[in-house]
Length: 469
Image 1 (cartoon, rainbow, N blue to C red):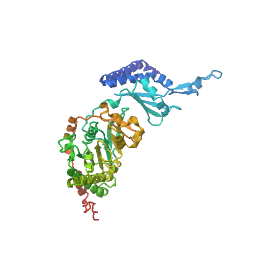
Image 2: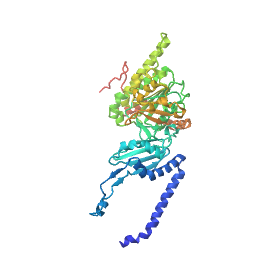
Image 3: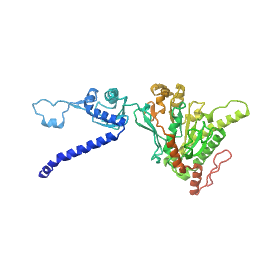
Image 4: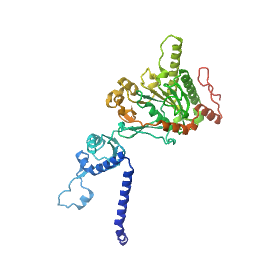
């Protein structure tokens, strides 16, 4: 006891020093924060100080009539019964650029549904544009309050130039509650991207290329239907990181699609012997067996139906029909061998992208659309039941770069603000990573040679001839 009391004179100075350090750290964080985060930090203080009173007014408290342990010990036998206790959920508040993230505990009769019912009252009290409530594990909820609308706040993305830690994770942007939105590319055969010109389609794909370009386990080919040469158009700065590129020439596109279908067949014939699995995603992409991404921009250029009886029209019609068949092969059969097809078009209606290709792609994004029919073609008929999330409502210039998609595990549709990547940053990344560009066919040749097996040859009908035992 004497040893403990001997430290008593030091308790106050130590406590004072700790408080001063905490205040100093808080002030430094406040000074270094951007303007939006400073406002959110002040908002977070108001949320903490006013939570007990607000929770009682919003019906987020519960009355416990059972006295606590201390009350039971100190209660007198003939005295009055202890007063009921009003329990208030405990919270933790974290500010960021757009608002606050509040993590709260649940109580009996105060669960996720009660928080969701009180969301509009919390939004008014916290001066937020909108408030969302989602489960955060057993007995916890996360309350997201945004002060400014993330969908109308343009954002930029500067690629780091470092390889992504997870090649199955595609970071799209932030949703209307400023939460990061990611989709998994594992076992995904295709992605469709739709939207009117200038809505942000190509910018979103530029971010995809810049994020995955630093990885040697990803190789990219592009068919751009709105240019004639690689030096033109939106991909001119990125072409150095692509192992193949063609413009709007149907013969060149047809040759590229045939080349990739041949690669798909050879991968399918050798995957068990080379990787030891029948699905590449069981082991993941590697520099020797990379994820092969085919980007088809203005896809309607390569699939449109030509009608006419002259020789030129018939030849073009045969080419586009074969293009559709070849891309269908890649989408329907390329998933397990590590081939991903991204199809981009202003409208993903059946005349732009054949339905036997479009409907196999599990991920669909739509930027601004002019008609409900175009929105339905891009996102499915269920978008009619969610008019507030329809891409038809994104035609205002403030929504350039905002897309809509259906997210797994979430009801309805999610609106996403995709960041802008400058041309200078795209060119820098492509230049710095150009040495990683490699033809997947040549990589497969080398990989099979190292295993002591030869690649199967194709028969007259294009199917691989089985390897001799």
